[in-house]
Image (cartoon, rainbow, N blue to C red; front, top):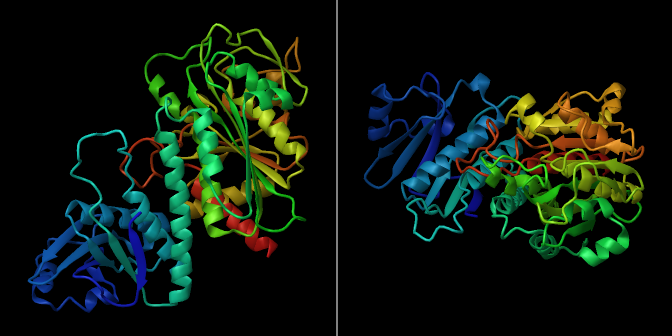
Length: 491
């Protein structure tokens, strides 16, 4: 990650100023508009402040960049985040090593200086994200930009605190993206366990159960899905005690299917390679833990990750099998490709057993959610209006957006089984909702929300500010903001 600092004056020979529609300049821009080259540029009619358009002015001893910010009335924190991303990419492409950025001068309705600094820094760090671990040739777009100063006119201490927050959130998001982008032969359940164990904080305890411990504990649904794979499963438990022993934790549960071929109900060959992303729910949980530990957030959080592959070995579980879960409920398996909810049943039941204040789960659970919402929003369901409203608000703020779907009681009938307690698919109708209904059977009466990130976990539209495809880290910025709000409410 490049160095980003807070400054109150020019520090570099490269400066970046916003320009609004109609060629309106902010105060810093006006201070340089009389310089000959800049005055000529502004008079030329070449730039009208259209959003995202970048122009560079070359002078004898300095360079100036103007980036169009568009209509001030339509400017949002997400658009500011995206502007910072565009600028960082442009500077990097032009081999600029250091620059001063004056984007914090833009007025955004309801946004404080700290909000703007955080958005700008997130945009720079996330915009420069690359995943080229396995490319042996030296690429021209390697990171050239080494430092950026966000120039402000305001409270330096609040701006620096916002910068620290942005760094932690960007670090967590990048961690989640890296995990998701790793190929399935590298990112195995064992690898996920190692990555979880490597997260270090004095108030964090991580336990990784191997197959023998999973069998002893009784996570039988996870074991059923794992039967077709030669690679052992893992069950990961993370306990972050940032608020003291008396506060019930918020439990985060993440689906960790490191590769999903569909099992006996095999997926089509086309795009099956993307099923390495089926562990992005677990990546979100790990990214959130990385962020909150770097922030030392004063809140208690429990993380639970069941992880396995879903393959077609001779011992693979089959359509028609009956599986007994950790909770004791029995599942009639109608489709082995509806395996995410099966392994989550054990994880949710375990999390509920720890008596958390609430549970939020993350899963690339249903193709139906992609059809319903596309890549613009994560599906949101649950039994708690308070959690759902909090996540909706955090989604609007971070642009890691969610959209609530109903869970009427009548939907539960679709997963009733004639020969077991429940079946693992309710059919084509309301597939996203009936999957959530399945999960609801394992959370008891604990306040709970389910995030179906199937459409947003990779190649997301409208939310991912980085031009690099692949994993997006969906859910990290959303839930870190939600947890920050929870911590503030307690304090």
